[in-house]
Each structure stands twice: as structure tokens, then as C-alpha cells.
Image (cartoon, rainbow, N blue to C red):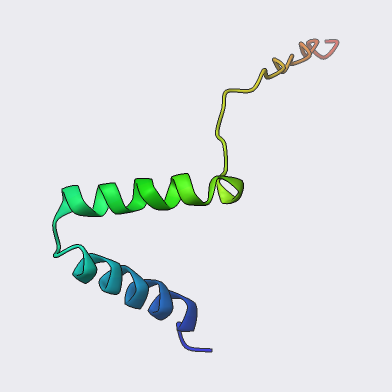
Length: 63
């Protein structure tokens, strides 16, 4: 397998860019429209509560 997945990603990226006339504003509108159309496929990176790791103190070795 040579870089089939990457080549497909690059091909699709180039196709979408061409459809938007290589205009970043049109590309942004296009992508926002796709997000609205496929809300069930989006990943949320909402902040999560994390736990703080506590390290145990090492005791000095007896002399």
C-alpha cells in the first residue's frame, strides 16, 4: 500500500478547493454547511473534568 489514503485525502481536498474557486471564505462557508448537514458525524472536544495525578514522595534511603 503506497500512500493510498493520503492520496485520496489530497485528491478530495483539491476537488473541494476547486469547487470553491480556491477562495478561503467560500471554502469556510461550504465546510460550515457540511457540518450543519452532518451534525451526527461531528466530534466534540468539550472540556472534561480531569483528575489531578498525585505523586508519592520518595523517602531517602537509610544511611
